[in-house]
Image 1 (cartoon, one colour):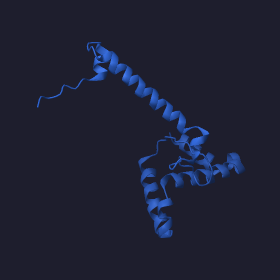
Image 2 (cartoon, rainbow, N blue to C red):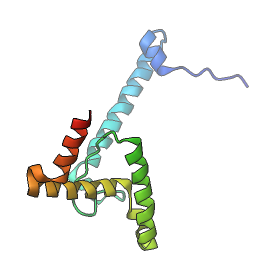
Image 3 (cartoon, one colour):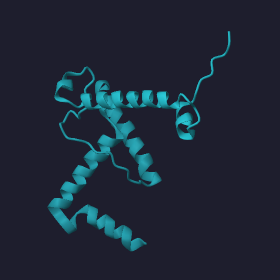
Image 4 (cartoon, rainbow, N blue to C red):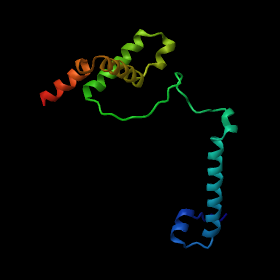
Length: 134
């Protein structure tokens, strides 16, 4: 049996060297077009009954991904806190305890206190203490 030569479609398209590149390019364009149609169909009202709907937080709140830098000490403390909380909750709830949930709740508490006390809040005091030390 002779080995079949397999063309690299992208290489052929970029170099423009293959005679079949036009045909393969149109096949690629058709494939992309079908993928775009499928993608837009997923977001149409008819697709709401799909078997794997996108995850929505149980509370109904929308979540946003955010990146913040933490000191190494706080990062380790966060892991320890998650482990200690997991020891305190029922086994069926352990999977719901996450570092994100801990951070979210801690920030809610801190921001609520800041809203109530303003410049007398622990948040302001700690920020000013940290700035003055530098």
